[in-house]
Length: 209
Image 1 (cartoon, rainbow, N blue to C red):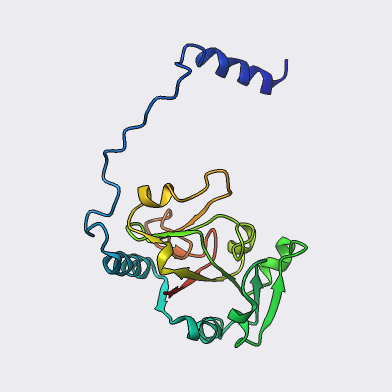
Image 2: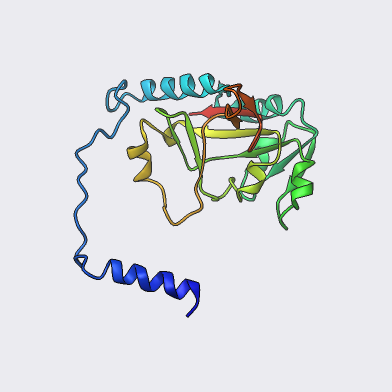
């Protein structure tokens, strides 16, 4: 018997006496950020901006018509950027650097040599200042969001939820979810904050109506 079969057999034995009918999950817990009233979308957006800024991200509110200019501004210091499949070409129309398509998938070395990545997101959570990517159109696979030094993420205001319970119900749990709260950072060693340890050192969020 293989190790896999052994583990599965033990799981079946341990769960054999569980009821077959699903047990209802209580949903009476607080489902929105306690500092923002339900339905206060302006408050939700303000909280997201506050949290992301605290984490060291740059956040700009941008009109739809100005998005391509804002993307070009965010990429001003970058020479190359990854554009996942499904990212609107118009968003990069005002930027004249090298656009790298991730199809076929770029190698780790190619991604490491690329300055930036531009993506959309599946959702954003104000209370924790978190962006959630699910690999959908304009988001791509996980690796391109981890290796370039700059991540530019376009977030629609309608994608911003007050707290995690609100967002969870709108995400597809079967998709590969990547949760990003500010630029990559750690303070593991002597509580000294270091950015860029496990991902981009810089995060720019463009918040669009």
